[in-house]
Image (cartoon, rainbow, N blue to C red; front, top):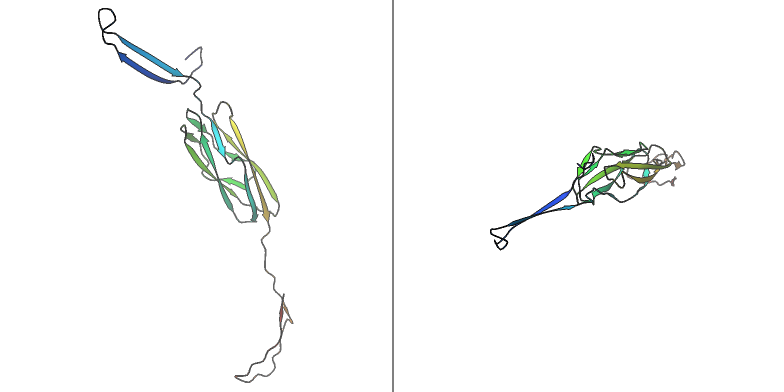
Length: 173
C-alpha cells in the first residue's frame, strides 16, 4: 500500500548462500525483484458478428471468444445487448486468468422481416479498456408459405370402366 493506493506486484525471490569468503563467516544475499505493469487485458474475437439472413421466428447462434491477454486476473461483468433480438446465453460474471478465455454464445431471433443491429457491451476491470463494444447485425426475412393451385380446379373423368385408364391435362402453379 503506497500512499493509499494498493498495487499488485509479481515478486520473484532469489536467495544465495555465500561460500564464507567475505570477512569472518558465511554470507547470504537476498534479492527481491518486482515487475510493475501487472494488469489484465480484455480481448474479443471476432470484433463484430454478422448473423446474415434468418427467417422470422427461427434462431441462429454464433460465438465470440473473450480472452485475457494480460498478466493479471480479469473480471468480466455480465454482458448486455441493446436489442432483445440478440440474446446472450449463460450471462454471468467471469474471472479469467492470464492467457485464458471463455466462449460467449449469442443467439439472433428476428421477429420481423427487417434489418437488425445491436451492440454487445462487455465491461471488465481492464484499466486501459474498461468496455469493449461488439457490433451485431442480422437480417430477418419472412417465413415463406407454399401456394399451389391447379387449373382446372376440378376434373370430370366421366364413366371409367374397371382396368381402363383415362388421362386429363392439369396445370400446377
